[in-house]
Length: 396
Image (cartoon, rainbow, N blue to C red; front, side, top):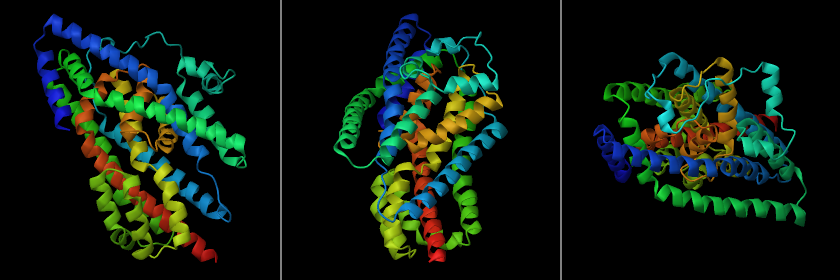
């Protein structure tokens, strides 16, 4: 964290010097990182979604529990993204970037306008290779989800295991490359900060970035204290009681910033303090830890809209609602990706040539955002588990 903040400060100071040699070096290093992020973007998105869905599996007599878990997960995640969209439209963060071209974005002003029908057809791939070459995010998510669901529905034959193990092996290699890139990331932050500070005024940065943070944290807090309690109330549960009982898991999530690391505490707390049946908690909570990412969906949506806005992309309602879908599917496939939501968002943005230098400014404050997001994710996991237990208990 200190290294990231130091790199950000040093880069900003170097950019303010307005030295052509420093600016050219910063642009060169930033261009290298943009290319590396674009290199990893497509496999990161595809493998994350495919392996997550493929390894969900199903056990005997688990159908009802699984259906309830998926239903509540999708509902809460979609609402989280929509809350983020609502706040983004209301608060309306401003632009930071004066010259988007200098941030590595090559957006064309002559992009043809597609009708709704043409846009829908462009999402349906007719060639398995073309979406990878074009970086068509929606087509890639559609393919990845289809393959992942197909694998999860197949019987456990040696052929299925070979395919899944191959994909998991490739994903492990990819994660090693990502870890290596993250290890060198302070150099990229320094270059991005120098690149941006040579174009931006401090007042614009503070105002725009402050509103962005307000949208992200405000959306998470609304999800935590309003939306999820309403879900519990609608199912006949007392949200204050549920939250009080699950406080140890929520507090641990806040400080560990890891839903997976918190999982043993979440399961123990749900069973011993909240009274959830063990066969439900031990099935629902591991699945929720993998796919139920309320905070992540909101972060991906808001950050993607913010970065695209800096690159000059017009944020029409069609575009924003499309990215609601992308953020939800991406959040579901986020499990296991190093640096979680941040890197997945960065991959999505680099895949569409948006100015990812903006994410270098966001990175130093992401630790605080990540703490809140993880707490929201674990609280959402707890709510899904409680609602599933309540529904199935009522039917027995």
